[in-house]
Image (cartoon, rainbow, N blue to C red; front, top):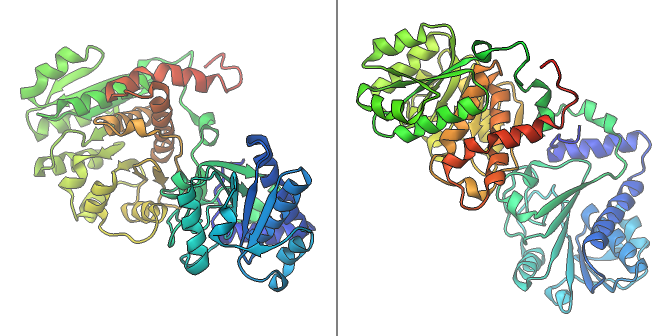
Length: 493
């Protein structure tokens, strides 16, 4: 499927495998440049276009773009960093096919341009921009001219999404064969603008040898395993989620419980402090509310095998009592979600939290909570989530606009459909509720994280501007209806 994300090393390997299979490098470059030119022609009316080429294969792609646009009647100026006579390999071939003038790639080349093609450096750039290349990136950023990036905006690290020295905002980025992590991880995701993946003739079969362990989180990855209600099912077969309710911050558990119900859990119980029991009982008629005056009462609720999934953390308060409740749930053999105050309660005690999780639990921290539990893990957000999952021995969902869900075995997804409207109080509690509701229905923790993150993003888009957390669960029926409509006939389920 086209949802695989390739590291830079894997992309280079794909190129080599394609050439070993008989696809010439010049053919790949010609197809890449033609794809960029076609994307430009489909989105903009003819106008003066400045094409900035670097000294490598990305620059070679730029020469091909220039040729195709000029042949289509576009006024083209081409600038090169370096000497055209020094270009070798496929880039040298591409330069030889360009019959127009080659100018020095400087900021003056942008004068009078209605569009800029950034073909300076691709995703494999391994050092910060400096000198003339940094000057060009800054000029593109300052001029306000629409920018089309070839592969990635120059200066963007394709593996991490980090900016190295500088990078101009692109309106459109055209990449090839598969996306790279930098297209989806911030700040790269924001800098790339619209990302178009072009087919340049690399055979799909080369994926088999690349050992892909990273995907963009789309419904295609997991929809076949989604726990749709069955005709012969009943509420008890759809699982029973137990949500630990806070004494003061009652809204968090209520939002989570509502989401767990909406996503399909057959029953949901809130374990409530007796002082808050009335608040929970009066506000949620579909939810069972059980007063829990002490640790023993909570263990008694856990003893019921039908309560098969547990959510602990939202609004709970970071305390020694919470630590004991987490250990009780884990030791009872439950699966579930650990969120919010759990990470404060186990601050700098990953070993104490991780014991016995055994890939049954989903950890859902945001960046600050992540740091409190895991400390300073170096690398990109993807690196951090993968390392954290391996250390905890259970899946980790590291939240944000570029949410990463990682499994201890190295599998990971990057979520890309979350709108900024989701940045509001209670949104994360709803996400945790979606995940525990899915786990209650038999979905494993990693898949539940993937499904919940995608649904959360779709809900944010469905509600849109003005969103508050209470809106999210109520929009779920419409989102699920659209999701189910993508499947074959569901009769009998």
